[in-house]
Image 1: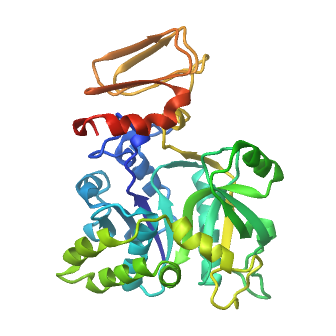
Image 2: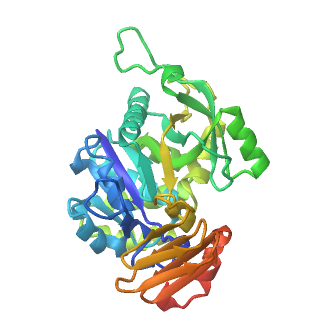
Image 3: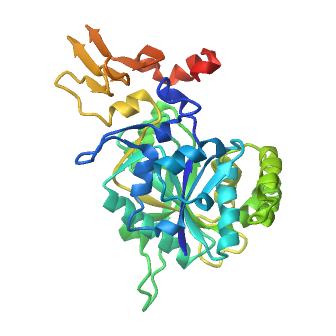
Length: 389
């Protein structure tokens, strides 16, 4: 059966001072949608994108255990057993492996999508169409790993890239679920490239053969665990202990004992990159011992809301490019391309003669910085006191 797991464990330090350790970015209700009843959180948006695609009872959230109560309050449709709480963050390979281990125990034939909780993706119809294609690719060959690449709109240097290789062709006579990748943008992956410099990013975009790595995947739970055993056996061994105890009285104790000992590494470095080097670029179903990696290109609006400049793109600008948000009043006078977010109701924030500035105000902290320095916010976050983190 088809399942979905939303990864919601990020701390969101580049959205400080609104995003805090006890209230991370994925739970902030600060995204306005046209025609909506009010601001929504990124996690709520991620869950709503699954309506009509995945049965609600087969949707899971993987997050920090400390966020469980907040998630249950914000999304009560997610029962306790469908919130996979990590005792501590051990990067994405273990979060995905944790989900795979639990889903395989629930359903040995589980195929699941790994989805993110920090993106705005539109239109939803296109997202669901391409996600459905990803599921079909894995159903046609359960050894496949499917990634989703975003058609780039500019030469970004902050994203990883995926190079598309030969089209996937599953079509057989009388096979109604067949796939002709040349017609639906489904290709084998030629290679992954991590955050290139500007000249290379420009060349990638101009070639038309590359897409941004979205961090979304589809694979069979048992196949992912097989790959984990091959490429990261330390993680696999620990997760199998967690799986064996799951559903028993020892489940929480084993999870809290084993999970913090797992090696901290991303799923890209631990599994996808070595698997892509092993698999032939025109892999077929009988590629023994390999995990063919495919990518489905998503030609849609994809916004990674991981920083204040990216959040600004969710807002409509005025004639001078200024954007404002928040419960409090904000005013940018004689200014250009400036973002003002005021989270304090009854308080007014004004800027005069500003250009390319970011101003964020909360009841206990105020941030002012040039937009060009937004990526350095992690440095400041490391220096503020624990009470403000």
